[in-house]
Length: 191
Image (cartoon, rainbow, N blue to C red; front, side):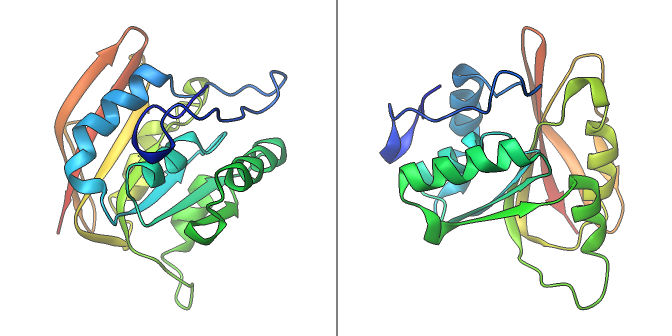
């Protein structure tokens, strides 16, 4: 697997062990996603949920994001993320959070929790888990978005996502694209 765009284009990125049931976002899909959000990526704060190898957050930095946060609960995947951060020499532009994604999103509602605001959120939960819908519902109540934030959800065609989710914020789908057995849905966050 390689970085497909930006200043790290062509550099190899490590993937977690084959024994780990992860499905990295393909190069083709990553390139298509960054083509859609390129107008928004410069100096953005990127949140990579279900981060796996960290490829999406690293790709974001390659494209000009100022910082990427990686949320992942699997220890082997986290080891891979740290290895990739070291390889790309981006430790000062990254933070790795070892936590279940749903708990991470729920923790933001607690008073006194340290918070960052995000410009772009990417989620790619394991397809068998059917967590895309639940994650989108939590994101609609998530209090940590910058103005005109974007959410990108990679999901299975077997788990279609709604055109909008409304909580404390409204998430409105503005684009959806299928790549075989992969669907990518794009949402704009509004108050």
